[in-house]
Image 1 (tube, chains in turn brown, red):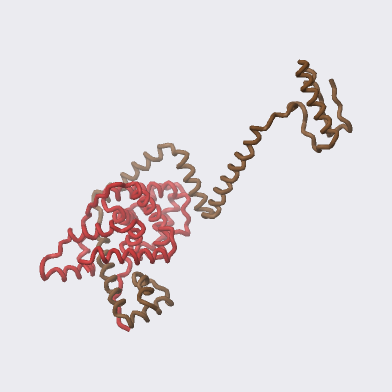
Image 2 (image 1 turned 120 degrees about the vertical axis):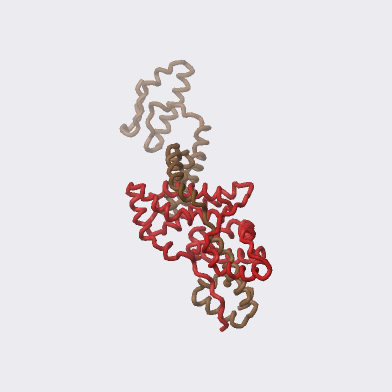
Length: 185
Length: 205
């Protein structure tokens, strides 16, 4: 092992696994430069450790719980926004089921939204069928049905032209129950 | 093999790992006894404050974010799982709150907290005091300022690793869990942070 490959391990010398510790110690035994680096890191960590002794003042510690309760009551009184609620829900899902199901759910939601937008666009633009209200959809598009629909459309056009629209309001169309379609006027 | 100087052990390991009692208190809070949350506040407020103070560099922001962190913890304690350590969970909320705050903060002002009397027993302090005694007394305040400044010059990610590992004494596995990264990433960040700190604090090493 070279000095460059050893150095990243010197900061964490106290917590290496057995395999790494063996290799690092083997290198250190033969390398005074890296041993010097270990000494410098030890000094640095001792220096940083002084910061453990910085303490908040007594007033802060004495009043912390009371301030916390005031703040909690104030925040609980506020109605959470939709964003906060959504974030909480996402947090719960992530906490309970992990990141992958959360991501999958988000992707599925986006995909469904895109699909719905995509299919709704042509439906808006599509021309409305001539007869919509009274005629039930045909279970099978056989020739007789196509013919009947065609005939109905012709009648609609014709009756609109002749202003006899009321005639079409009484059209009964039941292709599923009758062998032949009956038009009753 | 040549004997190497030992690296100081993490502080208060016994105290911080006593999670069985934490779980009892959390179960009480989850069961509706919200007064039990005060026991968790009392146990962790100083420690959490320490993390935030060293992340942010001043008392006011640290005090404010410590409260915000506990409020968030209280609100979501229902989702806390007993297999996790409470302090790891709390620190994670605290560190994320601090990182979000640092992204928004434009100005940095540093403030110093008092050192307690035990600091004089620290090997780092004794080493420096003996080095300085020949010429002049160790200027504690100056040292504190330099330490704070050096820490604040690190990137947020590097600072977080130093605060959690070197100051709070957490293990790499715990640091990785809190920061949401791999253990190897946490170790690598610590290495680069130490490189920078050695350069920034060269006069004291």
